[in-house]
Image (cartoon, rainbow, N blue to C red; front, side, top):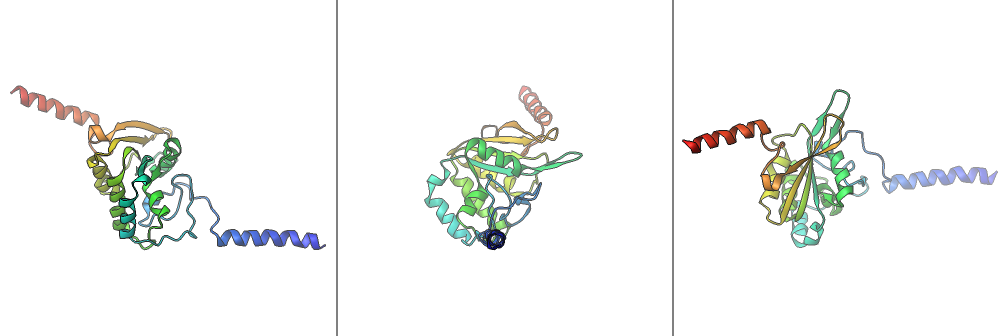
Length: 220
C-alpha cells in the first residue's frame, strides 16, 4: 500500500519542480517572437527559453558586453523577418531561422541577447538598438530568412540589413525565402555584394527596366 501511494507522490513532486524551474514547453504554432516588442518566448535556435530565465540586464550593459566579446561572433549570425501565407497555412521566417541555426551552427540576435539576460522591460526600440550593435560586430557570413511579406519599417530593413551591409567584417549576407508553394527555404542570393534583394528592393523586371534606361541615357 505504501508503494502504491509513494509513486504518485513522486510524480507530483517532479511535476512541481519542473514548473518551478521553468521546464521547456512547446512554442505556439506559427508564433514569431518578432511579433512581440519583447522577444522572450518561442524557439529560435531550437532552444526554448522559459520564463524562469528572467531577462535583467539593461541595453547599455548588453551593448558593452557585445563590444568587449568579439569571440561571441565567430559563428554566423542568423536573422529573420516577415512571414509567408498560403491558402491553408502561414509560416513565420523565425521557423526558417531555426533551421539555419542548425544547418550553419549560428545564433540569432535574440539568442545572443537572451544568453546575456537582456531586460524584460525592453521595448521594440531597445531591441533595435541592441540588434544594430550585434549587426555592427558580426563577422564572416550572415544568413537571413525572409517571408513573402516583410514590414518595410521593421527592424530588418531599417536597422539590421543596413548595418550588416556597412560592416566590412561581414563577407556575405545570404538570403533565404520561405516559399509560398510548400513552406520550404529557397535560396535568394547574397545581399552583401548585390546590395539588396527581393526583400529590400523591387523585382527583377523593374531592375531590368532601370538598367535598360541607364544604357539608353549613356547612348545619348
